[in-house]
Each structure stands twice: as structure tokens, then as C-alpha cells.
Image (cartoon, rainbow, N blue to C red; front, side, top):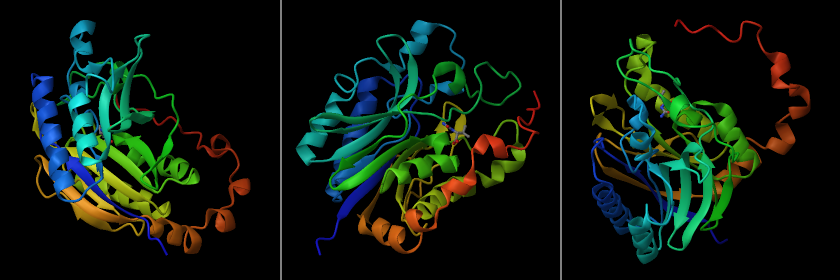
Length: 312
Ligand code: CDV
């Protein structure tokens, strides 16, 4: 039988300074795409907000200053050099960036792009953090102030005979993300992330940051019979220490390839897409074993203690 395989790469990025000129960042991203293609990859995943620093770690009051971090004309202009390299090397890529719409709405976005243009777009749904500065915190997390909640659902697109879904960073910690993708038949979930080692209001979990990163993605992959490609922005970026751990994870839940540095690094693996089919037939056969008719509305099952009050 004609086996469906695809060689994929997670492109991990080291820090990007706040002042980094966009063309320098693009040169870096293009060079990494060539490294991935040299290793045989035809599908690559870049991190969340791959074109800039993770600017939600800083309070920026001036809207014009803030908008310097956003793309107005994606994919034209902004990622044109990556698209040219993708066309040359016959690579499809997924990349995260900050998006400003013509109406001025702001989103934390990822797009699936090949040498011909944009194939699909996703806007982050689960936005962590706050809208306002938390003066006592060791770093800020202002995603709720800088982005609106995504309004495009969780799209799944056919690429190179694979059904590809997108999610961004904090989405990977929520089981609903993977389930919504798997119910649409996604065989690969692309997840770029920026994850600080420290959680400002809950230091007891700092020692678990790496573990919980892989735990979330491995559980999502296994419970939904899909491949997960996680790509990190890693290292100390403007004083905020971020984990690496970029990984390619099989539907078995096993990590088949992972980054070992907190710098620019390309992680490559061959993906057997039919592994999803085998697991969906024999282990997690949704049609035969899932019982959504018994689950009822999730809101009806909620513990009345919600929302658990935050300590500030
Ligand atoms: N960019 C993110 O969404 N980061 C979150 C951190 C802040 C917890 C994450 O889930 O990794």
C-alpha cells in the first residue's frame, strides 16, 4: 500500500531582542528553513510570534510603538523572503506572528504558508495572563491586553496528503484544543510556543515547567491519535528565561525527536501519517467508543466554586 509519510521539522528559535531589525530575524528564519530542507524536511513549524520578541512580556502604552510588532500585510512583505525559500525548496511552513487587521483588531496568529501563498490562518483562542500590568510580577504577561480572542475556530487543512491543524502555545494545555482538531480529522497539530521557566504567581510549579510542557503535548497526541509538532522560542530573551524542549511527538505519545539547546535548532523526524489511522481504528475509535450523548452540556457539570478567585 502507498504509505503516507512526511518529513517534518520543528524550528526552535533562540531569543529575539526587542530591538532586532525584522530583516535580521527573517534572514535567520530563512537560513533555518534551508537547514531543515537540507535534512529532508518538506514541512516546518516555527514558534509563536516568530518574527519578534515575545513583546507581551513588556508594558507598551503607546499604540504606534506597540503596532511595530504587528504584521499588516501578511504574507506579502512580512514573510516574502521565507516564501521565496519555501518555493525554492518545496517546503510548506507554519509560522506565528502578531496580526493587525485592516479594522485595527489585534490577534496572536499562526498561518500555514507555501511558496504560492497563505493556505490557512488560526487566531489564538486561549490567551493567558492579564490585560493590565501586574507590578509585583517578575515579568508581565499582557496577552489579554494586546490580542483579541481568536475568531477563526481551529482550522484543519490538507497539506502534502496530511490533515494539518493549528494551535498556539497556551492552547496546548487545554484538552479541547486537540479534541476539536481530531474531530475534524487532523493528523498533525502544529504548536508554536513561548513559555517562561517561571510562573509569576505560582512559583511552586517552576520546577515542573519542562515536564508540563511535554506532558500536555504528549497527552494531546496520544488521546487524539495525532502527531504534535511543538516549536519553542527559547533562552533568555530580554531577561525572561524561556524553556526550549521543541519536540515532535507521535500518536503513541512518544517523543521521537527533540531539541537539546535553548538556541536556534532544527528538530527533524519522519512522520508516518497512517499511524493516526491505525490508532483511530484500534485504540481511540471515536465513533465506536466515545459517548458524547452522555456527556451533556459541559456548563451543567461545572463545580459551583468556579471561578476560583485569583490571589490579586
Ligand atoms: N505564550 C503563552 O501562551 N505562554 C503560556 C505561559 C504564559 C504559561 C504557556 O502556556 O506556555
